[in-house]
Length: 387
Image (cartoon, rainbow, N blue to C red; front, side, top):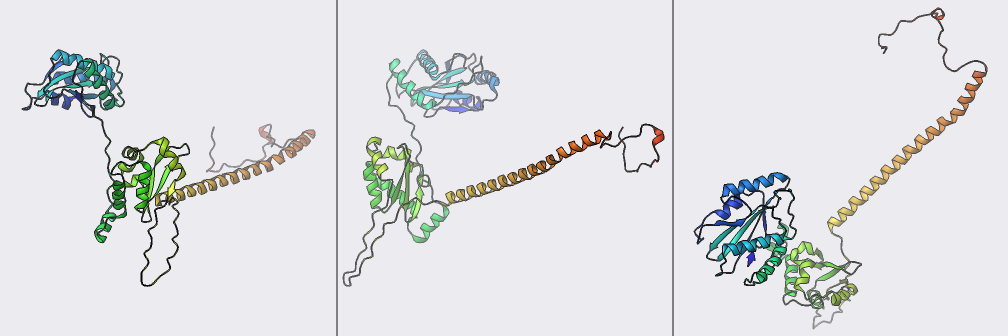
């Protein structure tokens, strides 16, 4: 018995319900609802029931859950057997009895199979079925159900990640057309593919790419964990991400005969290795001294992106230091002004005490009655009095 390669989730139930209930020429019998925990058995009724539970959690973008269980060709089960297997499957997948679901039986030339449609939102509590790594968990549960219900055991379908190569840029394609030769990136991809042809061990792989005039750098952390390779070909540095996902360490170690305990010491002792120099042919008639071949150090070259990032970091640090310096200068000036003002306080206190001893005050004395006002002035028009 097999399930879908990847369990699907949908924004609504309209299309998926209509799809599983739609009759077709390939069907030997009309698709029918054989089980579940819903009252309706027609498309409109099922959609209305599913939507009622979805309204409890309008924040969930994809409440609809869809998977199928298929028997090998030629095998059949009764409706009761299908219902028992489907209930057991949904229970182990983590759905409760209050998660609305229905089972639709299909019978075609490839064999019997059922479609399971469920609502991830619990119709009572409103809790959501998260279902992390569902496709992997589903495959394990199906294998256990085959044994428990005495079904034909089928090999598990493993979901392999898509391994791709990075496409050539327009400039690289134009270079290939102009020269009639593969560009350096394409050539390096072909060299690595050739070195990985028969699943060699790590030591053989390193030896092969070195003989192909490719230098390599092993990115090994201080803890001894291998993070991947960087390559250099024709004086051009390439990261694995620039070549494509299939050249990342996660995929390379599956292609290589890699054993961490055996191969990690080799990577730690030789993190960076230059290619083997090609001997310079000497003309036979006239002996010409061959200049000594200088091995080029294969220190890791900084890419343009890394240089730009470093310059931006320096500019940010310089600007930040300049702002901090201005703030410190401003604070120093304010502290100096405050210090000067505070020096006048003792003098003012002494002056006030001296005036008080003579019955005087530094404040202006207001007239006690109207007769002591000797002159009056008209108020200026621009002056406003707030009462």
